[in-house]
Image (cartoon, one colour):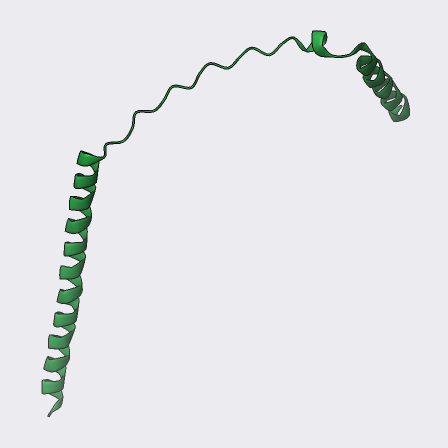
Length: 84
């Protein structure tokens, strides 16, 4: 075998390999598209369910114990006095 025959055989193998990969990818895209169409036809996406409205929270002032308010106030006063 001379070098020109080796080059020609290499090109043939290259074209055969690239062609087979190209055909495989084309088939893969076609099958994936068909599968997607079949699934969306027989199993459509469910409509989003509306969330129930949130309940209004009770007023914060009415639910807080007066003793807790006094403790928080004392902590704030102490923090401000330390800060200067």
